[in-house]
Length: 118
Ligand code: 5GP
Image (cartoon, rainbow, N blue to C red; front, side, top):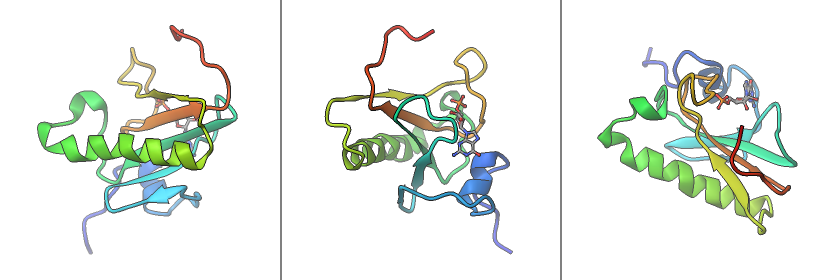
């Protein structure tokens, strides 16, 4: 058996298709799918297949993966018609509000966003 990919979180199960989830995008490095609890008319997540736990745990060798997450965020946002803009967020660790410990980029749009966030 090959080594499991995706890590031991709910997002690992999504990557391994153990939890059926429609992918908005997939390539060799990452996938994108809608958030189950959307914070706007559009809210999707982009996650790497490599189970990087959080941004603060990423390594220099992960630079290509981290760049890809933003590139995919941009492409899927365009497909979703977010031509007026959108919010891109990475929550890191407890103080950053992270709840799923597999790094993910949130893309939220379709409404006017406020700043600063709470
Ligand atoms: P965090 O708080 O870690 O930055 O964000 C985790 C996000 O994952 C939340 O917005 C939450 O709604 C979403 N989420 C948690 N479990 C699932 C799931 O099983 N499926 C999907 N599609 N999203 C999930």
